[in-house]
Image (tube, rainbow, N blue to C red):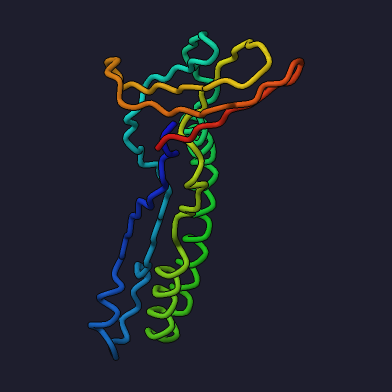
Length: 186
């Protein structure tokens, strides 16, 4: 049901004096505070779910679907578990770039600006994700006699209002065999 939340970048920039370097071209003043820092972290942006309830009817038997896996919650928890490690890695990279900026900036202001530009280009959040995964997986089990049967899936919103139905006609069932019926909703 639904689509998994998508990742978006949240970016924080801190510029400690880079603009002063451009203004002070030719100024021999030693400014150790010049450093450009950029932190970018991924965060999940939830998508609206329209369908909240579903049931299956086949062979005169009706069952509600139960939540089997909440992939949206798992993805958010996974991202949260990695947040501290991601922050520490970003801080380490920025610290090294800042030291390099200060060392190169003492020799020439152009190198300092180039390294600030390099920081801007290379520091970005990892916003890759499995955008086609469902937000939730629901499942139910029906025990039916062998033969051909129609399977009707009924979908409702949070207050139980019926939104739509999908009918799979002539689903062939064999004795002693398991048959999976997969229906994707967005």
